[in-house]
Amino acid sequence: MTLANARCIRVFLPGRTDRYQEPRELRLSSYRMGWLLTQTVLALLYTVVSAGQPQNVPKDNVTNSLETVRSLYYEAKFADASELLDEIDLHLSSNGGRVEDRKGLRLYQALVEIALTHSDVAKVRFQQLLALDAGFSLSNTEYSPKIISVFDDARKTFDQTRCDAACTECQAAAKGGDIQKAADIITPFRLACPCAQQLVKSLANSIAERGNDAFKAGNYAKAITDFKKALEMDPTNPLATQTSVLAENWLDKDLNSALSDWRNNFQSGNYVKAKAAYNRVLSLNPDGKSFAAQQIRTQYYNVFETNRQLWARACTQMDPLLTDSIRQEIRSFDPSGEVNGDILRSVQSCPTTRCTELPSTMVLEHVSSKIFPKVDPAFRPSAKIAVKVRIDDKGKATVVDIDNPEGNRIVSQAVRDAVERWKFDSKLATGTPNRCVVTQFFIEFER
Image 1 (cartoon, rainbow, N blue to C red):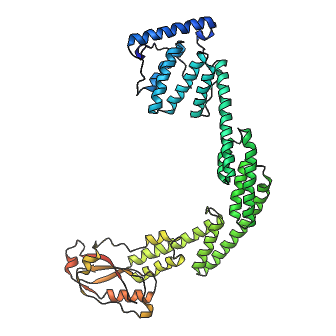
Image 2 (image 1 turned 180 degrees about the vertical axis):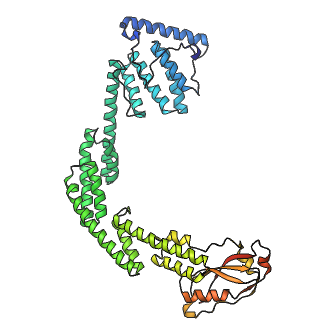
Image 3 (image 1 turned 135 degrees about the vertical axis):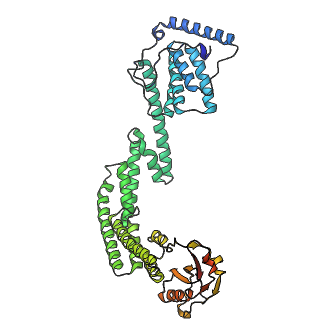
């Protein structure tokens, strides 16, 4: 028999609302059924011999092959259907396939085995189907009582096997000291598996005890996290229920105290201590979602945004000392850059769009006169100072921006005064569209 010879009829498709009617042949006597099966096998052998080779599954058409199986099944050609299912199974085993195709394969393997009175084999096929889709179900209105009975038996065995495996794995993780892993394993089964119910309570107790230890140590955030996990597993856990309220109260007190410390230090200009208070807020509430953390971030943002606007205005006025001063003010809030990193990156250097930008190596080759800044050795910075310079077509230099990481205004002023006395070759900017160039270089002091 080939796919071309298969006669197409209207058949039940899983998921459709067509009411299932059990094939007439299944309702015949066992004698008649045996005779029909014998005739089916003989017809199949004759077809195979006449065709010269067994039927093959089109490698790119598993779905159509399953449609043929459906037709054979509803024509009561169960041996033919079984043979084709074996071909499909072999193909999917070596080539993979969509989950829906594999589910269809297991479903019709089970149905055919039931029709052939191989209920034990059908049960295994249903279990394989459930392994692909644990939520799969059959409707009582669409399948015969015999099919439903075998499926329910397979479901019971499958569920029990899953429960046993989950409980065993959970116990192994708990015995190894990984309470969290044990909880993650067993929680999805706590309502479906009797063995999981006791394990869930035991694990909830362990997690609640861990939270109580954190509470006694003053780590209220950790305690609250553990209490929540315990209550998710067992809403009736008494230790988590009672102590979580106390932990939340103590955490609120600590957060309010840290917020007050931050506000006092911030307003007095002691930004280092203010940052330390902010870090304390974050440690008390690691997810950063507390009201105290949100208040601090809002005030930081407001100050940073004000300074950014002042910096932009100073750039427009080409006041390098003011831009440097504002940049240092932003740095002072948090020298590590954890809080102000984004705003510092946005005020790195004043924009200059009307002049041609050239690399410093090219520009410095055209210096005709250079004066090094004079700074008292006691004030000389250890860090390099970035200087952004605009040079016109007459060779005159104007300092557009200064970035002095150490923030000494005397040093910044000395750098500006010296660099603006430098002379450059006028040809450097004459040939550019706007008759000016801009570049940035670094000045480093010997100490």
